[in-house]
Image (cartoon, rainbow, N blue to C red):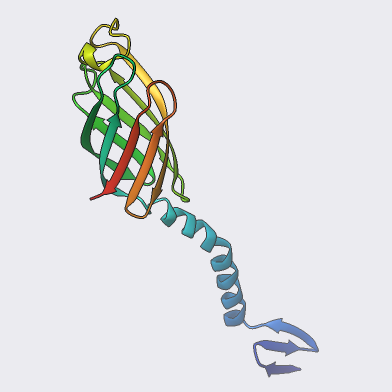
Length: 159
């Protein structure tokens, strides 16, 4: 005996889902399983775009202070900034990732420029250096602090 009742079909007393109802439940289950993944994927792009990056280091021991600005980019949560010409004396490159909560672990590497800006002043021009930066981004602004060596601060402004 065949009987239709709502989303189910009864054949000889055994309830079975209709094909359309079963498809709806499968799609709903897939949506519920995939929605957190899709949300995380789009969250990694929260900070994508161009950022005006300002690096400021005050006078430190016998070294003069300095400050400069350059445009950095963020794509899929990956930060990249370059001041100067890669590999040349005075250049600085900053790379790292920004988490969905805005916390960022960045690493700066570069080569020294004029001796007046290097603590100790015995370091030859063009000497390689590197340091970590703890940073946080929030909406269209961000701040950072150099972890090792001379004190330096960073500011980020989305363009």
